[in-house]
Structure formats: structure tokens, C-alpha cells
Length: 158
View 1 (cartoon, rainbow, N blue to C red):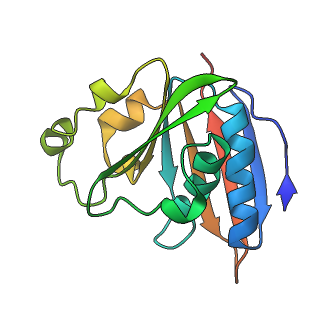
View 2 (cartoon, helix red, strand yellow):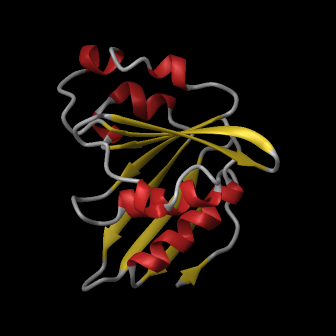
């Protein structure tokens, strides 16, 4: 795994991974650096490792073991409770691929999820202008040939 070890607002940080284990490791690093509240869009084609990255974030927050984290494609939302620096934290993992419009998106109750102690990670959120506007950052994952992935993290300045 290569890449930067810090994530600061207003900066772009890139990581390169060559296995699922390395992608999970990047997720663990990100968990330590993402202070709630955050609404992050996870972008990337099918199979690029968005859920794999979330596995590392959940593990680092003591919210779930990696094998307990699955894609919420059909359930739309998975909720995990963990801790960060001794404080309770909620991790919400959404997949809005199957949501067809802003009106249907509203039924998910995102406003209720965006609390001061929450990290909200949304796969396919770039489909919706309302989510892009409200997002505090994005994590883009791109296949770079074989098992190699390029992970780009961008956080908006507060």
C-alpha cells in the first residue's frame, strides 16, 4: 500500500492498494482521521472496493468485524455502533444505487442520520444533486489494472 497517512480538509489524498487487505488497511487509517459529523460519497464502478473500504473503517471503530460488513445494495442501509477516541460513534453505510429519484431518496431519512456523532458513507450518492451539495467529502475508488486500486480522498474545507 502506498499513499499519504493524513487527511486534511481541503486537500486531496491518494492511496494505491493491491489487495483487499490493503484496501481494508486504508479504511482503518481513514477511520482514525474522519471526525464526525461527516457525509461522504463513495464513488467507483461496481466491484472496485467501496464496501471493502468500509470494512476497514468499521473494524477500526470497533463497530463490526470485516466479514460482518456487507453491501447494503438491497437493504439500502446498514447501521453500526462503535467508538472513536473513547466516544460513541455511529457508522451508516448506504447504497442508493437502486433509488430512482430525489423524492424516493427523501424517504430514507438522511436528516435523522446526520447527527454530531455520525459518519455517513453513501455509495452511488453522486447520482443525486442533494447529496452532492450536502456531502462533506468524497472517497473515489478506481480500478487501475489487475487488483490495483487508486483511492482518492477529498474533504471539503469547513
